Image 1: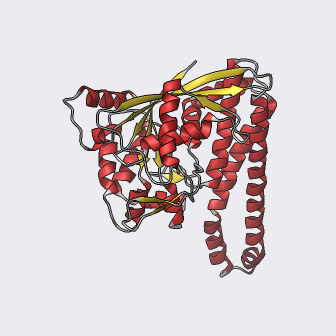
Image 2 (image 1 turned 120 degrees about the horizontal axis):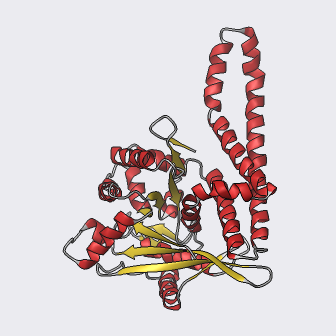
Image 3 (image 1 turned 45 degrees about the vertical axis):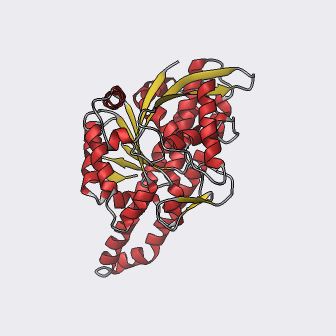
Length: 387
């Protein structure tokens, strides 16, 4: 069974351990809308469940990790088929450590050396950006930039594929911010912009740099307190949002190169799904460019009666056509996910289960990217652009 090591990189209070506890709770129970589940060693599942119970309690939050605390959590992805066979095609081992190792490094300790060595050797890094600090960035508070400097200093020593996970998304959503607005705000800071551009240049086959908004508790569980820093619970149940997306993205990005060889053996319907994904991407690009087309037609209409007709009638028709196609193919992606989930449950071997999981994760990521435009930055002849 392949084991994928991932380092969760983030300063204190960015929500590393709470995120992992929420990920476990979300994926530990087989759910119809997911199609797979995760398993951990008994002592680890008990520990994360205890942390989640503290999260869900009405009064307290879990204590931050102690400096000496360094834990590796092994999430084994499992698929239970319709014949009650269970296949475990891969596992992800997350390194979780006290954020003080990042913000207040002490290179003399064995624990600190272990953390920094793991960061340098990692193939995958989940960089957690504290959503409360991101919110302050909109108000001109640039203390988040201190985290940028620390994070990118370590990234320069690693060739890892990077996902930026924006935690506490409920805070940003409550303030009315979209992911596109958040990414634009982050990229206005030269440290973030230069760091992301470097990642894009150094990892051209990674599929880009992802920004993934997550909430370990959901949109209605807690609210920002009067001090603008602490979170006050509302007394509802946690409903984690997008916590499984980084889990899925790790596997998809790792197997990106392998997918090309898999596609040669794939069933015709698998190739059709891949073609739909590519078409959906092209349609999104066309939709993004419509304001440019409108501006061109508006200028041309002032100079030509014929172009005035095009501007007055065909521009709206073209926009309607593109939006209809995007909606239609978005619905097909949703149907594809249901189809892939059903086929995965028919797996008869570890290989079939792994192939099914990869296809399901890729389709789910396509749906996520449609729901959150701008979540992936790709180098395309310009310093950076969003999809």
